[in-house]
Image (cartoon, rainbow, N blue to C red):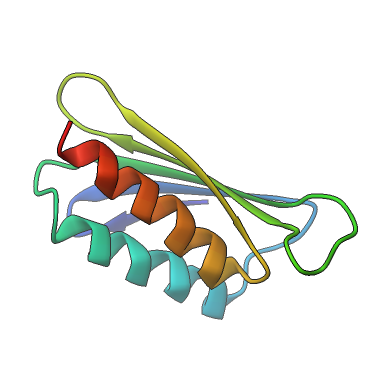
Length: 98
């Protein structure tokens, strides 16, 4: 599904399940957190899927940020969607300084 958050076009794709309002809120919250560090984001593509059978680390998040120049990409995993989103956003933030 495509959403518009503070003039940022966000495309949220879930594989094998439907997003819930709570999950959408988590994604939006993490995007707003990332926006504090980078003001020129124009698009965000978030892909969520459950990988494997290990419930301790089966949530996989792939995140692409559209910015002027080269886009940024990060992948994160965790036991929950919030943990996977945070893992990916921390990796994106490390790319901001490069």
